[in-house]
Image (cartoon, rainbow, N blue to C red):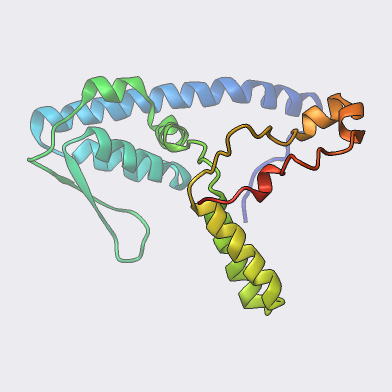
Length: 199
C-alpha cells in the first residue's frame, strides 16, 4: 500500500496547478537524456546509457521509450521471458538518427505515430452488407431477408449503373428544403433510380 500524505484545500489546488509545468519539465528533461544516450550509442556503439535510462524510467513510460530508441538508435531489443523489461543490443547494421530524435520526445513518440497512421477509412457498402449477411445467417434469420441483403450486396459490389435522361431521386436534404416537391405526385413515366438494372 502506498504511503504518502493526502493533500487538501489550497495546497491541493496549487499542486494540481503546478503539475502541468512538472510534466513539461519531465518530458523535456527525459528527451534531453534520451537523445544524449542515443548520441553515446552512435559514437561508441555502446547501449549502456540507453539501457540505464530505460531501466530507471517509470513502467508506464518504458514502452514509448523503447519504441523511440528502436526507431532512432543503432539497437534492437530482446524482451525478458517474464514479459517485463528486457535488454537493448547494439545493432551494427542500423544507423542513428539524432536529427529525427530531436524532433519528437519519447513521451510523445507513440502518440504521434498513432495519429499519423490513423486515417478515415472510406465506407464500403459491399463489405458492410457481407457482415450483415454473416450476422443474419449466424442468428438464423428468415431466408428471404438473407437473400434480399445478399442481393443488395451484389448491387453494392457491382458497377455503378447510370441511366440516361433519368432524373435522380431527391436526397433527404432536398426533400426537407422543398416540402411541395416531396408532396408532388411522382411521374409514372419516370422510373426511380433504385429500379435501374444493368444490361
